[in-house]
Image (cartoon, rainbow, N blue to C red; front, side, top):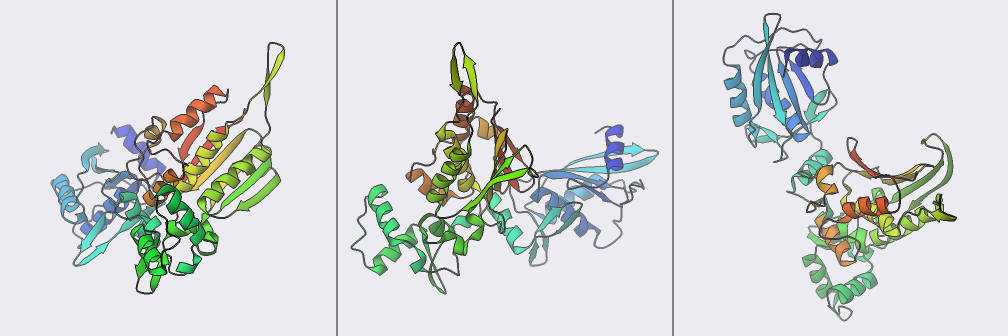
Length: 393
């Protein structure tokens, strides 16, 4: 980092990736405070800690000659799993500022070890704080150490599973004729398949069990529906032509949402020679982008449905949850082997022929849209949301 780059960063102030700290190593709790910031940044997307800069942007500098050794020691002993930051010092007006570069962690979740207690911190805006239970669950999901789709839904029961759909699935895709099974036999089979979970309060459906085979999934998981809105114009503030919320199991949601989009689509046309040629988004493209949203969304985020917004010039499919750990937009575009946030849901959707196990869905979308004469779709992350946009003109 150059001196000018550092000055510009200081001038811009703290944000979700930049933290200012006064050099207070004589204070007993300073090492723990520093470790807290390292953990919070590692659990987000990385960032920089500037030691020797006040919250009001005043540069006070560092005094010790063993700053790097101190920082490395904290990152190795108090931060778990340990991290190895990049350290540098830059002089400004005779004062040295220590810049500690923290990469996004790939062994999430990180925590500060305090006695027997593990404290997990996250970065929210310009502050770092201890993660709530829900936020901690998402950190474990991003690490692949825990998958929310196999979590039991305590408020539901075995009776909330549609046995007819279970029998049909088992017979068609697993070659198991379960209709003559006793309740005990069927329960054991479903427990082994992670559709049910045995708990202290009985056998209850898992999140995936309800989403795939539940009678009324949204009764227990209201965030699992898909809301659709069609705006006349190019902004959310435009006049609303159609609005609805689709509900049901994931296969039902996918099919109904695709039909909803198709009913509202206008087909632009071009003149080629003496013939008018309509531009139509292929059904497999719509099916893939909706399936991708339901298969990979973060179901632990409550109060947020998948949203499909249609405008005059585009369709946006907004799915709650950032990309899973190690997955990037660039990897998605080239068909990298998929990293599933919800592996059980993905497995069943593969059985039902909704998704391709080889991760070829997004490359197919890009190829089909190009062949149909549409601009290249846009894939992007905005905080805790993944957005895929299909441009219509």
